[in-house]
Length: 374
Image (cartoon, rainbow, N blue to C red; front, top):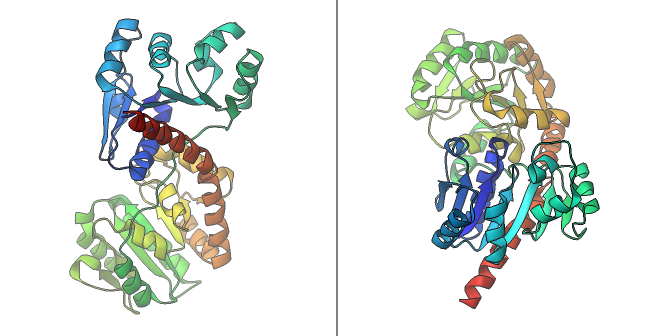
């Protein structure tokens, strides 16, 4: 049992990402995720082998009951407030414990006073401490925590997994599309379809062979999306009807399930659906992981932090209207432009990759040692 504790809502994505990576390394493991009662409902789409439970009250008796029941071999504590009684029990049980995304207000709680001895005592159960900022690392070291324990890594965020795809379909679609320039509108809501049509027609004035690949957020709307595009004056193919992209098609509605990874790999540009209406429907990290640059509108939905990270390194482009989208597609469709953006995004979302790998190796290594002792 590998135990992950999510200390606050901001770390839900990181926790889920770590759980998925651990189970990818060893599918026979169990991963237990704990959080407080308000944060736990935010965990959706748990990977197979992971389960959730409310973290126990911070008392010696309840801590012992919890550890006796679950018997974790390793603990990764991910941000938020520390729980002294629970962590003292972890220390007494000889459980390998790592603290990541540590901030000083989580170590000591709110308040202006800086108590070096209290800080040292609070983090004593952890074998390794990765801080979200340099100031926390400095204050812990000044408080007497061994410098060998503390590392200022910056915030460790989710480690995105590239979406899967069918290699045979990839070969078929790549041959059908050939050298045509194309862009992908992913997870498009009903209100956005006409905007996609207008943007594509504008972009096509610069590149008349341009192909729009479009996936509706609700796949059952595929036929309706195709009809709206036809009414806008486009020649359209519909994947659920058995169509392949033909030279005369200006748009291709890809309305079969679990194929986003295929289209991200084919299209050098991806527009994030929902961002021009009710809020982004997919993570912008998904296309970035496989080399597709990102364009989006202003409504970022639950992925605001993701977009901000990409924006900070100029790995995405924000537009407000269909007209601006058409201009952006025309500008960024050159291989040099889209490749530059995608590379900048890739470097940003993988900058903590080696740190994450070391956390996973540490957790699994201790598990293997414990298994050997048994």
